[in-house]
Image 1 (cartoon, rainbow, N blue to C red):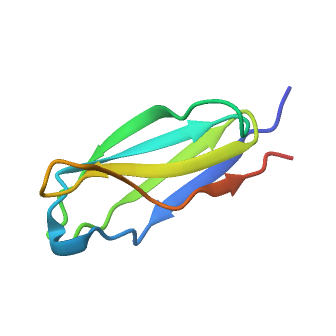
Image 2: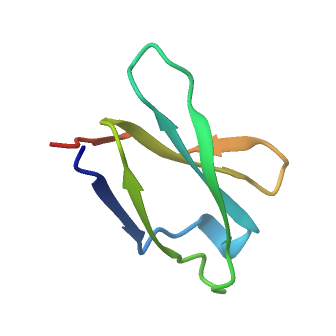
Length: 83
């Protein structure tokens, strides 16, 4: 049985409280494309959210959202390691 890696995203804020939802995206290795694992609605007026997820493999995470002009914006990439 593989141990699952855990990820907790909290206190992530979006400028001006404009994003309506945020996508949590994962790529299993540097050459693979990011895929959306979950779309989280933002109900906090300041854009904060709290999510807990588990992963079966190591990889990279990023957040994606749409800014007021309609452009898709990405966060920095965070490496997740499952041991």
